[in-house]
View: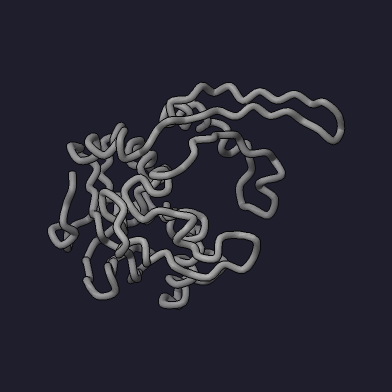
Length: 231
């Protein structure tokens, strides 16, 4: 259901998910199947707005667009609002220097394909030591079109729009406060906070949280938000 965060103040929420893109929505749908209540906090609105998009502005160093706002969308469904739909699978070398390996994600491939309405058929053929043919799939799923009404009517998924996370307050390894839009303090007690804001925004938020919460070391910053009760 669509909610006002102020109505949840002082309430214990089992799982809080930051971001309503593919990762956040997919997780919420899985929790719903297990009848686990969750809250999705989305910085944007249902659709594109200039105001929400300005939050993504920033300079990029390298051969990418000069402004981060050109890469992503701040709205329900995230960047799937304008993605091309091309899907492929990751390789072992993509996980170099990551704390997980490809085999850790393989069990979830079937479900991912169902969410994207594509077949789990990513065939590969090695032509030579220097060339390999890889099959890609095309998904026509736009997350707003497919999932917004479902989440709007869900008994287990709460969705807060236009709520940009500015900071969090942690006590005894539990999130006690979430500060929204640089000033609105929401008292929410949760033991699991999941960042699903995309690779760039997740990193920025983790560094910002670590800066404002001295109890979070850089070494355990990522792990901190995945600790808690077993699902």
